[in-house]
Image (cartoon, rainbow over all chains, first blue to last red; front, top):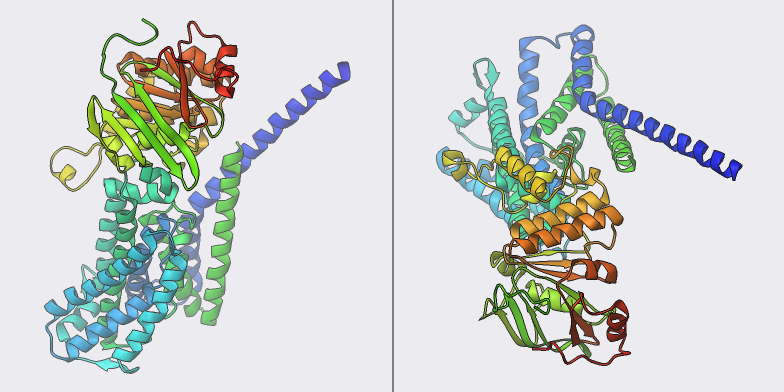
Length: 338
Length: 263
């Protein structure tokens, strides 16, 4: 009896100690994730200010903001989709199609005021098709949007005849290179899109349903939420924003490029995940995604200025992605064990 | 009294001769069923007796092959769970239908978030402060004390989660709350809490249908017990007079059928 009692006491003390250690670990991982992204950005900013020649020049900073805009807008659309535990692999191709459609229409002499809504509508239609196929539950988002990636890229090559499309639209091209209050217009577009998207996600009922669907789809359905409409909404938003990004990239390059946006879907997904979005759903914020895009942009630009091979930045981005998801897994595991 | 509340003679939900087949399997065979406002009705039977099918039909999740359903005395048909919810009928499912990543108040109001007043409300902005305040108030009414209402529900214990699911159903189920094994995964104190919640809901005039295998819980909470066996209703018991042995023999078929309380 005595030894049994003593053992019970010892093991109770042991499990209390374990629990304490788990709590401490959980705190550490939560801190790593919370502080991690902003912390790394700050460290990189300081480091490149010192080590990368010309990093702090107004010209370079503006270039960074301009370059962020396109992937940033894609990543915001991707964030909506990822929160529902979905994925949209078609955004890079949709960007390409939107860009080439805009260039073709402009070269045919259509006015900018007509071309922009038409291209955006094309994005909505593509997103709606994605969402409509996915909402039934029979087709996984990965497959539907992978298929759409191929369809849209092929379509882009065909309608653009596989070539660059020149056009004349001075107002649109000027808009893409101009600044307002010292900040490039493209970045203003990203900011406005980000604020609208963040407000929608954070403060509205329909925004909340996006998290609910990602957290428990069947439960959301039982609670009376229109799950199908929520799923269609996120893919429509993703398609719409990809089309917008396509218009912007065409305006910035002053020509339509049928290869524009190739591989961008992975950059958009990486940015969202670096920013805290979980592919398992119900996690992610627009601010986080913005910071994810910012981190990749700063890293790529700084290393470039330091004359590193551009591929080094890609490798680092990949390593960071894995490290962040690992940290998130640790946090999740510990959170469920305490 | 016979366990039947005298407050209202009209059942809030009633079925007559309701049947359901799945292929060659008869799940329900001409079952009459009724539940009155303000009572906790126990629905018991062995596995496969038809309890789940019956509750799913009442909740609009399954459509019957034949027979009629009456809601407050009038014929009705619930084609989807949403139809039933609109009529004030809520269900608590065995597998929790909470969203684990959302916080307590968000779950309590899931699908029914109050909108802000005025302009922002028209833009679909919801009112988290109002939600939290009403959430704290309702949970307080149910005797549920949670330290934080803004923590995701997957950080709570199983019992707390089940209590929230029950509280949600009781909050929105103005007329009928259907609970399928709500105490199955719970410890003693947590079960007592859920049983108390049921009594409280019945006290405010809601009809509670309590499906369980746990006879002590059934006897503790219910005003009336309906027994199903092999897809048929075989009797109605008054827990104040019936013994658990009688109940078990009725469930297993040792006693074939009770005529007494059948309508």
